[in-house]
Length: 124
Image (cartoon, rainbow, N blue to C red):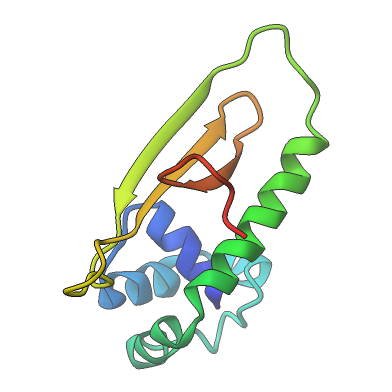
């Protein structure tokens, strides 16, 4: 279900309801590829409970490790282009700390990348 939520967000669906609608609308073959039984798709409520319960550091580490493996196995083309995107995360700022900044870079020839923090260091 996490994979389906990541795909929905990558497709531009941000609110929980929109993610649930995306999952409900994908073809049965896509649902199966995402590990979801086509006749038992997650509800809006299930997605609202699951996503906030995820540990963001563990999710970042898992995605970063997966991307690193994919990047290491990609052939090296003669000319490479890298897309870079940065975000300031909502919510984590307090009186003592600023919001966390996230940077992602993606090799456009392979569509693989590695998330980085604002200092350019890989997430642990």
